[in-house]
Each structure stands twice: as structure tokens, then as C-alpha cells.
Length: 186
Image (cartoon, rainbow, N blue to C red; front, top):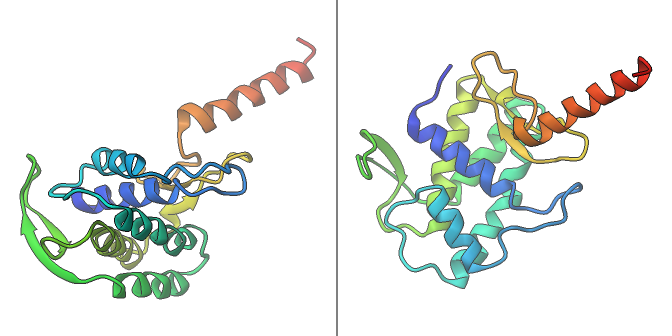
């Protein structure tokens, strides 16, 4: 199953947001300053964002612990409960739009909504679409033992195991290769 462009964009935003939190394997918080929030907004291609304030930063940071448990829950029912609570925090006013060279797609937050409201509603609806499609297992955490990043597996066969194949995946493959060579006496 493939999701629409706007759903995949929102899921990517969600993963990036959750991964700014410090975790058991990474004590780094990469969303502490307005500059980091501005970079996040640019990277995730948010349109029509006014000047960001400390209030925006605090509101967006407060969303992270709400979304993070969705990546580790083991049932659709608990995921649905979490997602419904998240979506209820925002103001939803679905509208069609085609901006920045993207085809027609749906924005679920009202025009002029705060960044936190937009993230709440857009990412919450994207998660709801994943759950309603029976695809919750696509939401997971990286399997590298020293990484706890969230990931969304959009591969056709649901085989993505690492948040980034070039870092976590490659590091584990190299370690396994070295262990095999060591075991064979090379």
C-alpha cells in the first residue's frame, strides 16, 4: 500500500519531530532553539509559516511525547486511542490546496493555524490513515541496538529495519562482517 504524497510528507514530519527528542541511546535534544525549529520547518517544507516565536517552540516541543508512544504500541486500539486524543487537541478544517508545485492535496488544519496545530492535525490524520489502512506495523523503532529513532516503513514488503540504512544498517552489517571474518580466522 502506498499513501498519498501529503500523508507521506506528514509521516516524514512526524518521524523527524519524534527523533528530535533525547532518548535512551541519544541524550541529544535537537529541538532546543528557535534556529533549530526554523531549520525543521524549512527541511519539512512547511508553507505559509509566520515568524516563529518561543511559544511556537514550546508548543511543538510539547507534541513530541504525545506522538512518540505511537511507534511502540502493540495494538491498533491503543494506537487509535492515542491518535484520537492527539487529533482532538487541534482544530481541523479540511481544505484542498496545491502550493509550491505539489498537486492538489488536503490540508486538515485551518488556514493561519499555529505550527503546533498544523503538526497536530496533519500528523494525527496521517497516523489515523495508517491505522485505518491496517498498516500500524509500518510504525516502529530502529532495530540497531544503539539507536532508538522512530521510523515509518514505506517499503512495499515492510522490510525496513533501520532508521537509516547508510548509518545504522551499514554499521551493523560491517560489524557482522568483521565478526564472521574473526570467527573464520581471517
